[in-house]
Length: 93
Image (cartoon, rainbow, N blue to C red; front, side):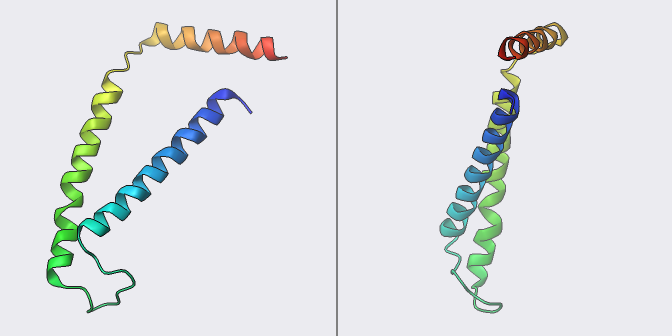
């Protein structure tokens, strides 16, 4: 398996785990009752469940965009990366 595929899988798994932790945090923050059925959740908990994730998601998205914008990659840089990958692939065989 190539390094790029392993890297992408690792990144995706990391992102998924972070979002799961974030979701659990938001549920805890909203004091949403665990295992509650319909009608057992207070109006305040439902409001908090909507009020907290929106700013959290927007802030997270803005941070992600800031990090991605710091990565300067143009066509020449991309082609250089592809060339290096091809050289490394040949060296492995």
